[in-house]
Length: 340
Image 1 (tube, one colour):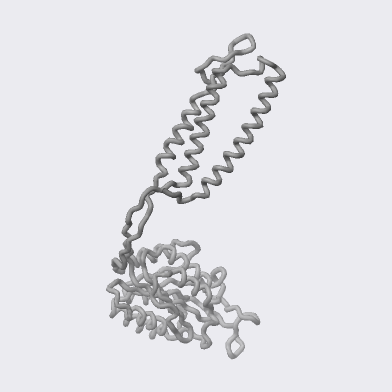
Image 2 (cartoon, one colour):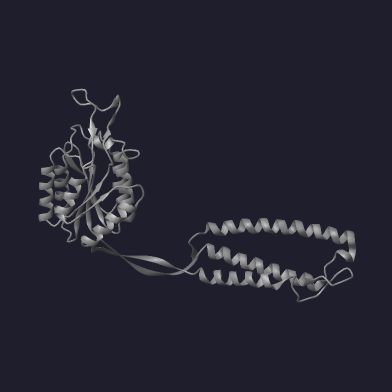
């Protein structure tokens, strides 16, 4: 036998020690009252006995609740764990337009938050990461370790690429290459996060056709709400002619990419509803297979008995009473077996 949360026993011991000190102090006060008043200050023996019974039931009930909170465990059993999922490659836009602040705090930071929400709802899926701007490269191969992928995503920004631009087609093709290298016979999909701004949208659509031919749907999530300047160290970003650069999201491109491959399109909103909707669409369209079957040894929990018995004793103590009832007239007396 052992305990899942043994610290609960130490906490319970501290509480009982404090309760005992309080009880001891009250007993000393009662002893002083008896010494001062004599028989007038002494409880009848039957009443004192009944109170001791009530207090004993309360103490035992609380002790059993502490044991239940520590979750005693007896014996072991083998538990079979089955993981099912698909292969997903996240394609993240790192072009300078993702620094725009038309969504708070920026398009890129919003995209990172969306990915954190996505990883929170994944169920047995392997995830890879491709980033793109003026070019593209696979940053993380397919893995079940989404915490590691999330740490990598936290570290990347728009300075990751020396060559700026927005080569979405290269990003999609890098994702296709990652997915087709995997021999796992499972559903495969691309999750694209971008503001949709691309200087050669026809190339992105051509890459989407390649994905469709391989039955790899694209699930695109638009990040951005309106025309915006791009912040720079010296103020708004300017082009070679000194004009302030304006960036405008292109939802139509992302919608067309999803439509061409049998995927889905969602626009980013505050909260997790957009990602949950996108993942729901993905789960309905992409096959998930049993990826891994493992067995582990687990303890059988046995907190139910002390919990039930402890609650019963506390209830019994609450109805037990202390045997005292004031008699009309006189100085009052004890009636054993009555309640307050």
